[in-house]
Image 1 (cartoon, rainbow, N blue to C red):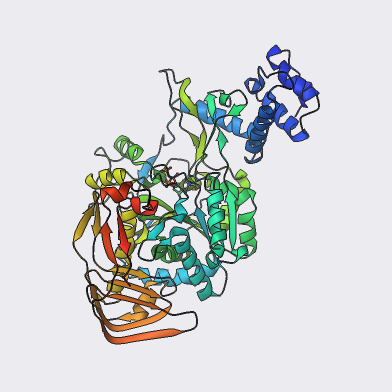
Image 2 (cartoon, rainbow, N blue to C red):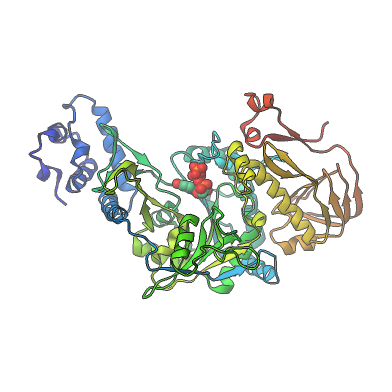
Amino acid sequence: MQSLFDLTSEDPNLDGFFALAKSGALSETHSTVCAALLEEKQHHLFANWDPVGTRDADKFTFLDSLLQAHQSYPGGLPGYIRNARKLLAEASAGSNPFDGCTPAQPDIIDLSDFGPGYDKAEATGLKCLSETAIVLVAGGLGERLGYNGIKLDIPVETTESTTYLAHYALFIRAASERIGRKIPLIIMTSRDTNPGTIATLKAHANFGLAKDQITILRQELVPALSDLAAHLALEEKYRLILKPHGHGDIHMLLHTSGTAAKLTKEGFRYLMFIQDTNGQVFNAALAAIGVSEERGYDFNSIAVNRVPGEAVGGIARLVKAGHPDLTLNVEYNQLDPLLRATVSPEGDVPDARGYSLFPGNINLLVIRLAPYLKVLEASGGVVAEFVNPKFADASRTTFKKPARLETLMQDFPKSFTSGEKTGVTIFDRVWCFSACKNNLADAAAKAAANSPAESASSAENDFYLAGRQKLRMAGMTVTDGPVQTIRGIPFTTGPRVILRPSFALTLQDVRDRISGGSISGDATLILDGDIHLKNVVIEPGATFIAKSSLGTSATHTDTTIPAGKTYTLHELTDAEMSSPDTPEFLKIRGYRIDPPAG
Ligand code: UTP
C-alpha cells in the first residue's frame, strides 16, 4: 500500500486534509487508514476540510471512527468496501441467490411430541454438556419492544422476578455443578447493550458465575454505503453514518477474539447459541445437543413446526446441480415463490398434520466446534454477508437511503464447502421458544391475527405453561385455568409453576423427583434444589415454595397444601399503565403479580 504522501492529490478539494496530514498531527494508524481509503477512491471523506486549526477536534473524532471501523472488520475498511462493491453489483443486477435451487425437506428429527427419542437425546446431551459452551447474542436494539434498558434485565417471570440473564446463569450454574466443569458463557454485546450488560453483571456479582467463565465480545457498527461504488456515507462533514451489521457478527468475533480456537484447545466440542429473551431455551437445549451428537450434525437448528405462509423463515435443503446441498433458512416471502417456480405449483402446502415441510427457524443453534473453526479460519471470520439496498430508480443504480452489509447468524452454512452435515431438530413451540420481542400494542395486533404475540406477557405465560407441562409429564395432575385476555394478549391462568434448573435439568430429573399429586387453580409452586414431591396436592390459592441449598435435600410425601396467603395477578389500570411509578417491566405486560400479603 502507498503512503499517504505518495497519494497527494491534484484535487484542490483535498487541500485542507493534506495540510493537516503534512502538519504531522496524524498518527501512523490514522495515516494508514486514510491512505487505504484514498486508494479505494473514498476521496469524498476528506473533501473540503476546514483549514488546520478549525474544527480539528471533529476531524480527529472522525478519523477515530474510521480507524475503529477499520480495525474491527477482518480485512479492514478496504476489505469491507470490496465486499460491498461485489454484493451491491449483484443486488443491482437483481441476481437471485436461490437461482437454480430446488427446495427439499431438510434432514429433520421431530421431537415435538416428546417421542421415544426424547429422553435418549436428553441423556446424550447431558453427557456432552461438559464439552459445550453457551453463546448468548445480546447486541440487539430491541426496537420492536421499545424497552428502556437492556433486554437481559427484563424479568422472564414476575412471581420472583428473575431476569433473563439471571435465569440463564441459574441454568449454567446448576449444570456446571452437576457436570463438575464450569460451562463457559460468551455474551455478544453492542455499543448499545455493552455498558448495561457489564453493569448488571457487576451489580449481581456475575450471578454466581466465575469471572473466568464469562467472555464478553462487543460487536461494532459498520459504515453505511451511499452508492454502488460503495462510497462510505456521511451524515455530514466529519461524521460517518454507522449501522448495525447484524447478529452474524458473533461468528466474526468468536474468530477474531480467538475464543473459538481457545475453546477448541480446552476440549470443548459444541457451541449452543441462544437469544437474549427466550426463557424456554434450556427446556430443549440438552435434547438438541444430544441429537447433534447422535446424528453427527455439524450445524443443528432448533426449530418449530410452522403452518404454510406463517411469517417465520422456513428451513429448506436447497438442491442445486453440481453443488453440495445447502440447508438454509429461507425467508417465508421468498420460500413460497421459490416453491411455485420449482417443485410445487401451489407453493408452500401443508402436510397431513397441517404443517409445512419446511420447519420454522428460531435462531437457536447447536454448532460443532471443529468444522466451525475450520470455516472461520478459511473465511477470516466474515461469513455470509448480504446487502439489501432500497433502489430509488428503475435502473437500480441509486439508493433511497444508505445501505450496509449485514450478516445473520443462521446463515453460517452458506460458508460450508466440505459437505458439513446440517440438520434440524423440531420441538414443541411453547417448550423451546417464546421470546419477548414486541411492545403490547404490536403484540396484541399479532395475537388478533392468530400469530404468536412474542410479548413479555406471552413469554411469562409460556414460562409457566412449560413448568406445568413438566409436572404433567411426571404424572402430576395439572389443571389450567381459563384464558384471560390482558390488553389484547391471551394469558392462560392457572398454577404458576417455576422449576429451577437446580431442581431439574432434564425431563428425567423431573420424573425422578415428582410422582403423583395435583395442582390447580391460582396456585404457585416453586421448586429449587434437590426437592422430592410424592403425592403432594396443591390446592387452588395455595403457595408451595420448597428450596434446598446445595448438598441438602427434602422430600414431601402425601401432603395437601391448602389455600392461604398467595400470589395474585392484577391487571394494571390505565392510570397505573401511565403512572411514572409503575416499573417499565410491568408496563410491557399490563399486569403485576403481588406476593402473599404479610
Ligand atoms: P432480534 O430479532 O430479537 O432483534 O434479535 P433485535 O435487534 O434485538 O430487536 P429489534 O429487531 O430491534 O426489535 C435476535 C437476537 O440477536 C441479537 C438480539 O440481541 C437477540 O438476542 N442481536 C440482534 C445481536 O446480538 N446483534 C444484532 O446486531 C442484532
